Picture 1 (cartoon, protein in one colour):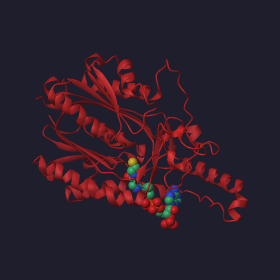
Picture 2 (tube, rainbow, N blue to C red):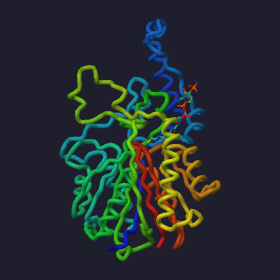
Picture 3 (tube, rainbow, N blue to C red):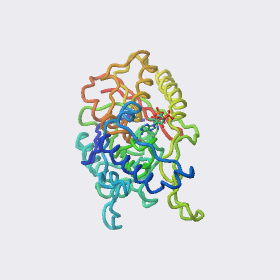
Picture 4 (tube, rainbow, N blue to C red):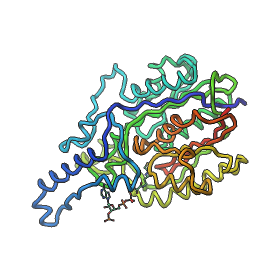
Length: 373
Ligand code: COA
């Protein structure tokens, strides 16, 4: 058995930003257009008028102040309200692979590794831009990595589930150096015309390099243990899938073909699940909560993270103990906890411990206990 370690991480951040104020102006213009176009039906009580959104609500309800996106113009055009991403030809890199290349290059540079030394690429994300060939295999080829590659999807928990898969393979010896990469184009599956959730997501890509601790060339984190858990729920759901065109007519603009959630229920049900998951993981690994220097949590909602931090540590966490990045990035699905890890881990001293934890649709929860070597 070999000791797995995280030796590098990297973040690709899109160039375009949408602030809450910009988002709300676009949404309200869309709502006004909709209400004008449907004035008669609204007056007859057949259609519900669309209410305005507000920046104040967004920041208070979620803690989100802005989000990065791959295409701002389409999202903010009241006549479009979704990103317009150019369809790539089959012989040019896909958009997910392109984002991944940037994040992987940064992670490999931090690890001091070349791509040829990688023998496993896992593309772990909430959505994949095509069914096959796997995005991971395209990334493997673009990087010039060896070995094998595959895609996996556990929604917001994809990154931690991917880390567990890679760490287990390193432990057993079936691979020596792995990259887990999380290109999340959340803007493509968000319904920007739905006031209840139009502010939730942003785009990003994260990458993490794992290898045998004995191979590490620089500062690294030992992966002490991992834990994944799932429990079926319909409270976060997206019905888009390969049978879409096989369904009866009239399905073109179905709301259920984008991200849907019952946010309140998610709040109520996921919080206790996550808290007991982390507590059990810590207890089973013989680690006291007071030994934790940092929690890198999934980035969906600030109130949620404050609650989890308080319950796990048994007190209000200091800002540096539980760094949030969602004010800048919004919810970036599986990438959120890895952005926090990547941006807020350099200062940790040898022996310092922390937990990377993600949670979301499924339901799914994944936690990775790491120690600075
Ligand atoms: N602007 C202004 N008001 C809004 C609004 C908007 N954009 N969206 C909703 N509201 C209103 C609602 O209509 C409602 O009004 P009412 O009380 O008069 O009916 C009120 O604000 C509260 O709405 P609600 O949807 O209950 O808000 P909330 O406090 O639950 O916050 C979320 C919404 C989505 C931020 C929150 O539920 C959440 O973060 N849930 C968990 C998310 C999560 O982790 N998801 C996982 C995804 S991977």
